[in-house]
Length: 81
Length: 249
Image (spheres, rainbow over the protein chains, first blue to last red):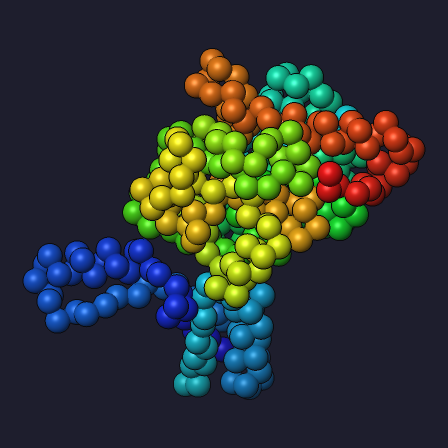
């Protein structure tokens, strides 16, 4: 089951890369882009019998490895198609 | 006494650490492959600089799962002195042996230069021969050394005197300009609550001979050699092998 995990820096954590991308977009003329936060995206193909199970496994993987809870938070999406 | 230098795939400061321990200080030293499960009876453990496991996912994130890390954790739990230089510090953070995490440098630049760090505390095995306020000129070489922890964690570090090195001016003042990476409170190195585990971004192992620009890093090695030697002289060898003993001076 295709499961997506989005990892981003917590709102309270300064994101130097996101700030630099914001500046670059402003240089390109995209003044309407107020802020950019850069993160990581994972696609997990999980052998699970239900979307709940896939979500639980992906969350566990994020807690233990994909995200560092000191600086990052994450969001899980399960493809139900 | 014996130093164990852990070698991860991607380590590049392993031989610098080995050279310092073995040839500058004349101690027994061994390179220990990350898939090994024993530290070979070492008295001091060094996690070297570099890019363990290619820094994949996050710096130090995969190294935490290397088999040798179980032995490092047991050694640390028994009170054995463990130090991580640069990437070794990042591994200690990801392994949970030290609190906090590293962010990309504020400037986004990989900083490779000599910096000044001030010794804040001397009651760790790696700073026992320093004096408080001593300024050391030691090189850094990192892209992700921007130390971060929640404000409550930083408060606890300050309260427990766990911050042992800060980036400063040559005169020893904490300023924003002297901070090469944006670390909170100019933190360059910290110690565990038990004070036997130390991590720092600078590379004292690359500052042990004047021929390479500075010998200010020597005092870090001299400190731990002194602490371990005095412990050996007053305890039975088996106790030393188990890594027991009070480390605070």
